[in-house]
Length: 267
Image (tube, rainbow, N blue to C red; front, side, top):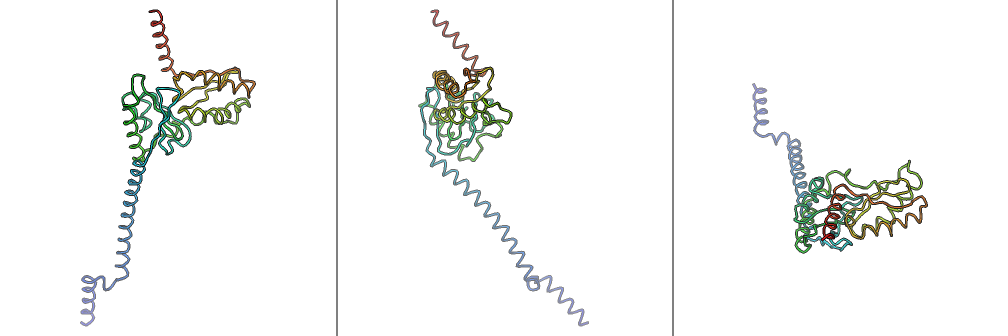
């Protein structure tokens, strides 16, 4: 009888006062719960602080602008890395879908092209548009993008960074061409908000494509002939000349412009 009473009291104590019998287990449970809560709070605080820092960075961002040889292209320098390395160019709304920033910039009236360099953004406008009216919207879009934390481009494979990479099967003259373009030509062209892309070397002719502010610039032919061509021919005897590669859309635009000039000349 006494053993039954003792067993009954033991069961009652376990049900009514578990903390008295298992203080270590109860303490471990509370500590585990507090640890989980702290982890959740710390994670939330980190996300909130990161958001505040990005917003503060955007508020403190001082975007500089620089003129380029092309009156319809302007170089914007946000003071932070844009691509870091490589470049990317978008000439229409469809191609801009690969970049959240380019997509937003193309929604501004008058924007006809967007070019991303290592630490700058070159924006080209239509001839009838005015920079004075476009600049405030461009500043706002750039600042909003860097405060959002979104990438510049969705896929890094879209960056044109491998055109001057020296390959094992490149002939000696091609290796020298790529090295000169990457070390001598590209830095000076990027200072003007543009870039250059190596497209090949055939029959003594170096094929190049001008991008950014250099695209459609009146002085681009002078840059190719007096600058790049003379330098390459001086250092590499195999080079006989330089040819500019023009995109299909740009070629159609030039043809239409030539037709307009002819009509005006006939009048």
